[in-house]
Length: 151
Length: 151
Image 1 (tube, helix red, strand yellow):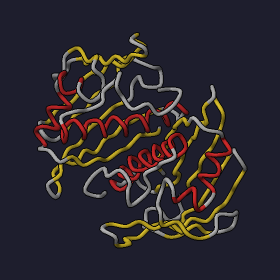
Image 2 (tube, each protein chain N blue to C red; image 1 turned 90 degrees about the vertical axis):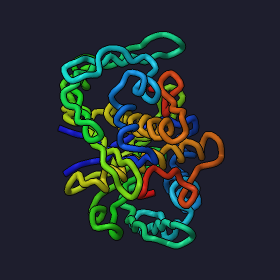
Image 3 (tube, each protein chain N blue to C red; image 1 turned 45 degrees about the horizontal axis):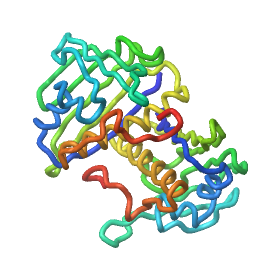
């Protein structure tokens, strides 16, 4: 098993970060504009991504746990084979006037090359979350930061 | 044991990427301006970082392996306790006209919070390497992208 881990600090309230992680509008403003579905516990959030205006796939996440201003946990129930069954968590805490986000994408079966790509890509999306909360503008797909031939 | 993994693609030649990873000038242009020491196999490269114009520490890396345009491997011999004994590798390959960099920071004893920070920070430095080669300007320390209260 292998995990992707990240940490960012955001000059914002924990409540605002939590809202950006747990509402369709919030998620659509930093991860992917095409965010649909139900973001309550037990619901399924549907994230889709595009290239040249054409939907190219994405992820369905079941919401496993929500603790306001503290914790978010999803399980991937549909998407690329390597993602299915993995879990994605966000832990929030206050530190020195910052909202700290501890991010984990847990349970990759193998550290395949695609996992390396997703690790870098998650970092750029967490910087998008930070930008959204600090400046009012994130850079969700399809306006996301391109990192390679794999976008 | 836990590893930090990343993948970026750069519109540049493998030789130019390799030069940026294996010369003091190259490294100083995307990771930290304060890069000293010997970058040949068996040599020690000394990386130092600053805050508010004051040196705050850094890493000493022994160069273990170099394969032109293919592979770079360092071992951390001095720095924060969590880093000592870990290894940092860059694998290079050509794909669809891109130079692909597969990055690994291997052998963390525990997935501590500092590792989460370093994972995100490595992503931003690899994007700095990409920017250096594609635009001529990277963003090495102390002009690096700040991601949190831990800089």
